[in-house]
Amino acid sequence: MHAPITLNKAKHFHPIDARLRPKLSFWEGKLSGKLSFWEGKMREIVAQKVLEGTVSPIPPYTRRNIPVPRVPNKAFAVIGMRRAGKTTFLWQIAQEWMAQGAAREQVLYFNFEDERLTGLEASQLHWIVEEYYRLYPHWRDRERVIFLLDEIQIVSGWERFARRLMDTEQIDLYLSGSSAKLLSQEIASSMRGRALPITVFPFSFREYLRHLNIEPERPYKRLRKAEQTLIEHHLRRYLRVGGFPEVVSLDSEIDRMELLRTYVDVAVLRDVIERHDIKQVQALRRVVRRLLSAPAGTLSVNKLYNELKSQGIKISKETLYSYLDYLTDAFLVRIVELSSRSERQRMSNPRKVYPIDMGLIPLYQMGTEFPLGQAVETCVLLELQRRKGEIFYVKTPTGYEVDFLVYFPEGYTELIQVCANPSEPATLEREVRALLDAKTLHPNASLRLIVLESLPLNVAVPEAIQVSLLSEWLLMEQNSDSVPCRRYLPPA
Image 1 (cartoon, helix red, strand yellow):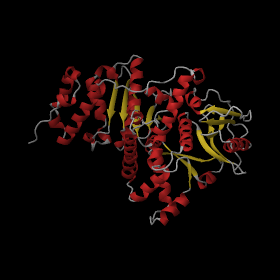
Image 2 (spheres, helix red, strand yellow):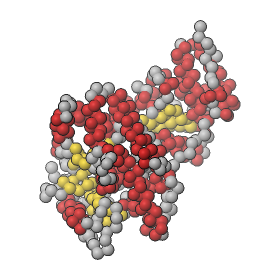
Image 3 (cartoon, one colour):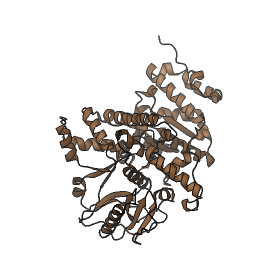
Image 4 (spheres, one colour):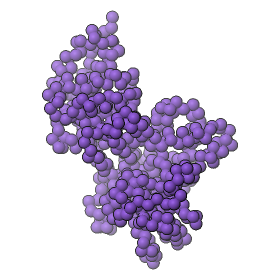
């Protein structure tokens, strides 16, 4: 006969749990007769996590500048790469709810990434609701409560539970996961338009400064020279260190590299190899190395296929396309396609590939000079994605290339060229000509040149081009000084 199941309060429970203990005991004595031993043990764990998730203090966090859509009767899917800060963002949502008057017990945080929950099925997710309202029956059908369900995609079929919850309970749902496509596909097919995504990136530059307690309180141009110098110093560190929250505070480069390498390995293993049952692991790791070793570079699947073939690695082009999709879905890389009205032309031309964070760039650049220009371009791309731009790159008929063509959701368009070192006359001339040439394809787009260093005093650019210092552009209010214009598609 199995020993009775007991809860270890000393090991697992918060000190104030004693006042809630009688509510748990309601079902504890009935488990053995109604559930199997395994089900009883699993439900005990669920009940324990529900209790802890409503009484544990909110951990300290750095506030993120991530807007939450104001759309009623929707669930929100919080997605992003592992360790980018999704969990702390969920806690930020909880804190904002409480600041508006909600009680702590009206907020449930439940993390499914717990080895004790291995084997939990979608049909058992209702235990979470039952145990919550067993503890807090006075909230049911009277006040809205909020469920923060972290890494819920681990439970296959979770979307049916989420939809039923929205249909039958007064619960606001925030769901997190590490795979964009996994959540978006399930939401599209099963949530029937009732869930919206919220993407969490590593820290922006402003969030990086906030995390270090040096966020400026005034616009860049109104800062004292000493303050501007400090900002410029930290910008160069940010371009090398990146914005993963745990990494930002580390002083040791060796520790940073080791931690970031772990991030990549875990993302590849958990979110690609295990999730998609990859058999050709060696080929996948070669692809990862190839993508991360050439930040802001173009990728041709045909060339990659031939490169791997020459190394004795047999893999189909279709599989390589799948690997690229998987790595994008795991948020390890970001993809920018060529601007064209033709879907076929966009797919047949090389894509530009960027890491999800500048901190990943040195991982595969050992023994070489740090590619500052590519880091700056990556930084701009990630900030544009935070600002929810629809982004392409441009090639003109005369052979010039512009880094980004951006359609902003507010309805205006920008052609953006990035230049780390504008003091080289030939480099600056090339960047300016590229923008002016691309303007003929996109006449309604405003032109912007983003530079890491200020232009030399004796150098001027055409008035049509707005020159932005990278530090100032990263810290400005999003899209505040851009000119609205209608979207324009180039000829095929």
